[in-house]
Image (tube, rainbow, N blue to C red):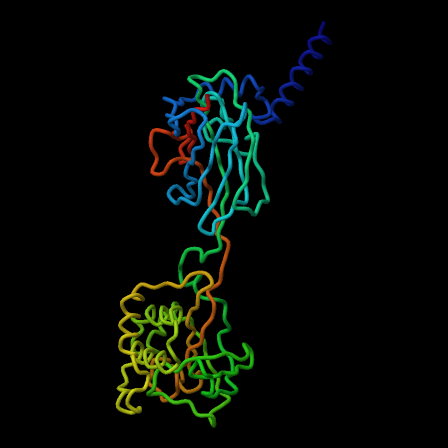
Length: 372
């Protein structure tokens, strides 16, 4: 009898140990899932997004809670729903997760009521597309012909991230040696030749400071025009930096003399007009006014140009803000592009009675569609 009691105790202990090593999810049967979902408060179901049963209907695809990046198209095809994701405006789809149910409490959710998108029955990963379609059977036992659709996606675009100076400014070396320059370029003020970053065109931005061929090589420090910080003193009018950057991105048919004169007007306090032939850069006044009007808050985007300033490392000594006779020059670099991705859900935006939040405490939504 004692042996039987001991054996029973061992079996009981083993069972407890086996259970103790499993998660709550491991222990949940399909019936348990349904019971747990049934205990979540779903509230009143959403209204239908469509007026006529089965008609082709487009629903906004909303990223990051408030940005419409495309749309979801839903229609009835026989006994199925044809559901197509579309993105617009440079956004593309990298993942999809889709579920269609007859009652909201049939969505696959976790104990908090948030959708378990990895368990949605339809979807793909590792995509790079602007459009993808799914054929989903219309569920049985509908109420008033209604189905409820949870349509999730991960959407991405090429952008400049946060829009901070760190994302606008490209990676550049701290300094380089200017070995040669001339002013023979038909479209720019200078041809510049650096030891490290190579050959590129550039601009003179202050006529009060000269560069002479006999001075080369010159050690130059580099700084992005949107990240000047304590170096804002290297140009007289740093408050016009955005206008100057607008100018290089909206140059149009302006010639190099017009651009140069406009740069001098925007960035320098020097009275250059009295020292140059009359008519130099003819029309620069209107160009400068346009740049100040349209470029007051300009921030270049992915693929546009940003000005990089190069200033004489040797001539300024230990204080970059000391006025010197050595030139501060500028050249252009492309704003780097990076992949920016967001979670997206399909619902009419701004949200109305055709969609509802999942019961969890996040912004994820599902919507109603009258199929039959």
